[in-house]
Image 1: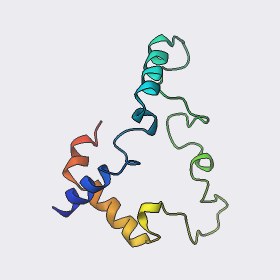
Image 2 (image 1 turned 60 degrees about the vertical axis):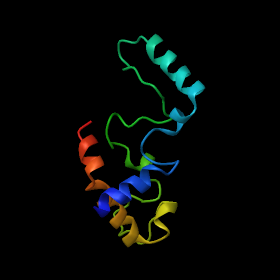
Image 3 (image 1 turned 135 degrees about the vertical axis):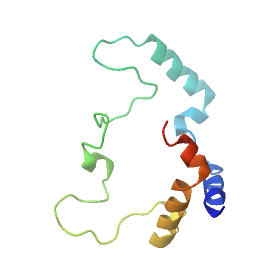
Length: 111
């Protein structure tokens, strides 16, 4: 199936979605595990990797996440595509659709 081929191809790229970038460094990952297991707070939930901003668990701060798209009510013209889209919006959509519909994604989607 073409979708599986696209997903498998995407998953072989180093900047892919299979793991967070910080997880590729074993020493750093061990530091995060140690911090996680020693963290004890009644208000803040445990976490492996902290971020410089907080989303409250959802997309409640879209301007912090989607800095290339303004929220001023005006129609959006051009947006920034990731490098792998090769400046082609149709390719971007096709690859996302193919990956989303792949068997590998369906197996992990609920996690």
